[in-house]
Amino acid sequence: MDDAPVCRLIPGVFGFMIQISLMVISIGLLVLKKKVEVKYCNRTWLEFGLDSSKQILGNLWIHVLNIFFSVGLHRRHTAGDSCDWYWVNIVVDCTIGTAIEYAFFRLITRQVIPRLVRNPYRAVEYESGVYGSTWGEFRIRNYIKQLSVWILVCTMMKFSVLVLMEFGSDVLLDTAATFLGGWTNDPTRKLFVVMIATPLVMNSAQLWIIDNVIKRSERVGTDSLAKKFLA
Image 1: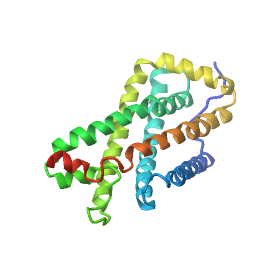
Image 2: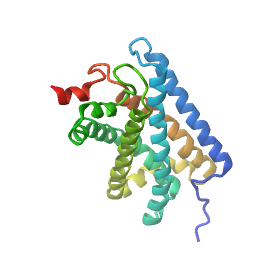
Image 3: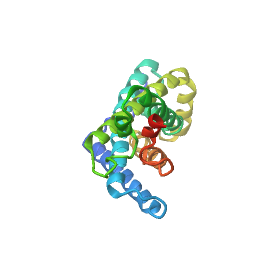
């Protein structure tokens, strides 16, 4: 019987507080990005906050899916433990998954929505980063529609990644075993690497990249979707 200690993803109240701290750090990194971009981008703090909230909510949703899928993949494949599978989820999400998110986002906002929404002035409400009318007033429905699109993109990405992981499970587990091998016999240290260190590095880079994708486009203006209809 194997008595080796097992790393588990649900570490209790302390682990929950660590996750909250990690989210705060991620928000801080986005604020730093806003400070850095102030010289070449006229995005307001309100727009920045709304853009960032879409990312944070999307990441929380993916976090829930990752825990669910990691436990499920561990039970399905038996090899490794749920921490190994969670680490694999994070790494794949923040590399291949980022490219998949970009592709799905462009497909939905530039191809699907203009074909489904006939009214050009309704279509422009889906223009990412544009939260007001032509006169600048804030419209909550713009935000809700854009948030819904982003949650859909995150969900489509996660299920796409799940399919890739099913086909490449052996290679991915070997990679996880190689990287996490030094912490295998210490579940606490392994949990730190899996749930804190890796997400902090990988998600931070992903947050900066995705922020450039979902913020208001300076090049095409705020009525680019409307122009697709009115041209």
